[in-house]
Image (cartoon, rainbow, N blue to C red; front, side, top):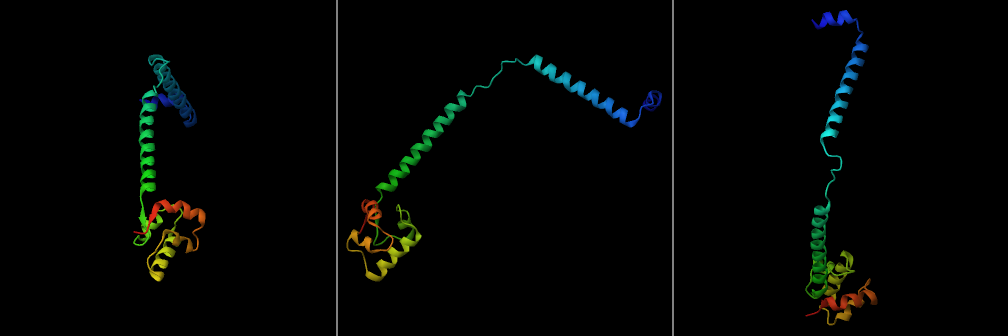
Length: 138
C-alpha cells in the first residue's frame, strides 16, 4: 500500500527525504512550543541554598588550614634525633638541607647549641631566625 502511494506521488528519494525532514522539524517545533506554553516562563533556579552550602564548606576548609598552620608553628623538632622527614617539614628545609643536617650530626656529633645550625651551608641568618623557635637540641 505504501509502495502504491509512493508510485502515485512519484517522488524521488531526495524529495522524500526533504518531506521527512520538514515533517520532523514541524513536530519538534510543535513540541517545543507546547513545552514553552505549559512551563511557567519566570521559573528560575534558587542558588541561595548552594551559596550557603559553599560558605559552610569554605569555613571548614579555612579552619582546617589554620589548624594545620598552627600545628606546624607549635611543633618543636629535636635536630639531634630528627629524621629526614621531620627536618623537611620545617619551613625552608628541603631534602638537601635535611641531608646536610644529618651528615653534620653524624660527622661532628650532636649539636651542642641551636646556633650550630648556622655552620651548615644553605642556612642563612634569616632562615636561622625562622627555624630558631621551631627546633630544639634536647
